[in-house]
Image 1 (spheres, rainbow, N blue to C red):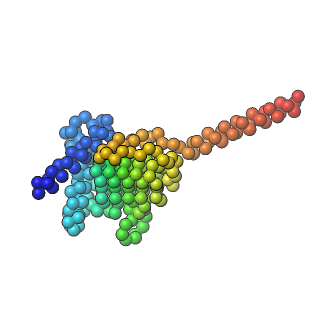
Image 2: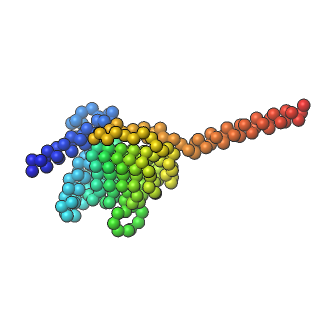
Image 3: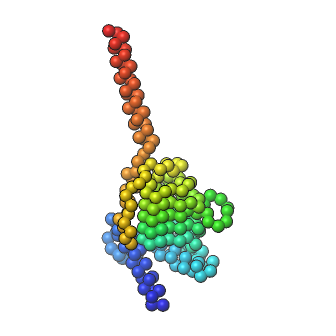
Length: 228
């Protein structure tokens, strides 16, 4: 019993710690405990998940609904969430029943980890370690998002993403691969710069503009030669 209580306290401390690591606005432990809905959502989910694993159904679901009511974050009690999970401005987040989330994962507001139909069994995504998912992103289906992946705001991911990738767009496209691996420490420095992701559409437009300018210059040169 004492060992289990010690584990609960450690998990609680870890959940508070990640808030300070990833949110510069956090000023004190009391502020985090009283004013951070993402923290509240994680704590309530851990209670609901514990009861769910005890084969209880109604009580965990009631806790989940209460969680949704006070935080705006809906997490099914069956979802499995690892250590170092951080929800920043979490209004509108939905996490489905068979979702599995690794360690040191960060979600922003409006993220959906959902399914695509009425099939039974595994129907929600598996999220690896050290993953950052930007605001409004949707990950739909029973596939895996690899370790160290960044998913841009508003992306819609419908297929498996390999580790060390950056994904943007609708549907989600891989625009960067093989970024350096994170260390294996319990808590790593998660790259939260999801606002600095590549924009392949803008890059293509720049290439087209450059090519058009080159063609225009060639035409002017040829026209000048004809006049001579």
